[in-house]
Image (cartoon, rainbow over all chains, first blue to last red; front, top):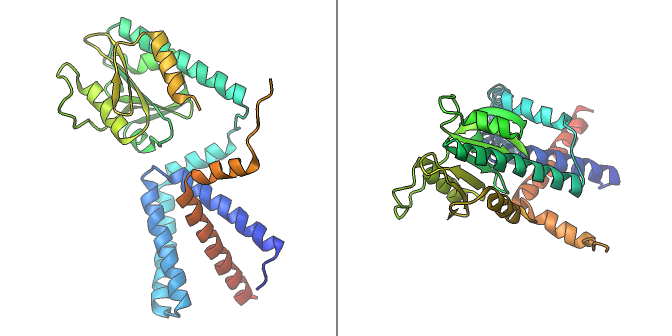
Length: 246
Length: 45
């Protein structure tokens, strides 16, 4: 078998496709199943090389079943992935910068209004570490970031106001999400569950988390396990911009 | 004022730094799948 340009091209295309499948599932519960399928695949190739017919036959059947099973179990993720394929990618540094500024303006405006109205809020902005596993604990929204929508989510007595809202890739992906609570015992007792959840999430990821206190009406920002208290709308805006600066 | 564009090797280094293990696993899988499918095609023919 000789390596031709066509062979290299085919392998490269396969590489890109497999890499994007892995990237897409990374951080979701589907990655564990995908890992299992990859191990089955590797074992299958090994058994074939060693001419172990019975084990090879068993694995072929198991592999076929696992592919069908994963199609059924993960149909929402697959649907979401196919929908993402059809979306137009926004390119260009300027348009991305403008989009990011718009998202920040809308978020800080909502946060200020919520604080003035004595309404608590917990908002996580994804940076590099994927927040997909936390999104799965809440209700999927997948909407543009607007101040009105953020305020609506946190309106008291609304079904989603209790958990955290996640902004991923410039979109409100989910609300009512559960974040891990910090185990830090040194945190002052004046901080409630929202602050503890924000610190907990920042201990596990590099997300930027905004907390609005219901009692004290103050706006805080949590990043890399650090709490920045009593921020104004402008301070919040510039602090987040500084964190996301490339 | 002109902005200096990063060199191709710099771009490649930056690209390799993002999910390096996933890239290696994906490449291994791509090679395995290609050889398996090629073998199957030849056997079928």
